[in-house]
Length: 146
Figure 1 (tube, rainbow, N blue to C red):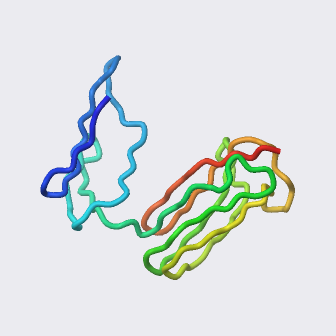
Figure 2: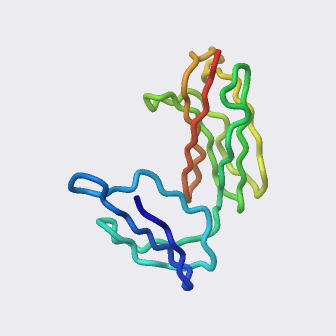
Figure 3: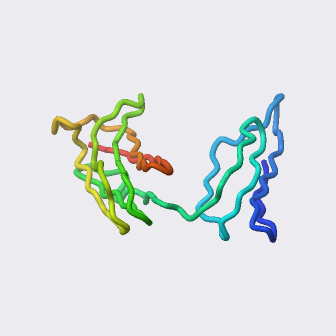
């Protein structure tokens, strides 16, 4: 257990409590925004300065999920930059590239029809879609139910 606090200097403070065993770990931490732009010293073994900024790209939730025929995946781009959106299976193998290339600022929606890069229907199950740019990467899960 732990808690996250934001102090008056816009610094994110993460308190981590060890529940059992020798180590405490954070499995997932998402920071969506922090204003104003600041630089802070990282903690733990990373120790590198971390710059907080507005999300340059953001990835939405799939709709619908689970899906049978198709699902829609929305994302947005704040400034012109290269972006790719790919589908992966649970073993981490790339299934399909939904988009790859330069994107202008704006909101986008892509449709995945449950097929691979050859147009073949993939089996039912969990899949991951990853939005990647030159500044960040986000991954979410979608469920295909045939």
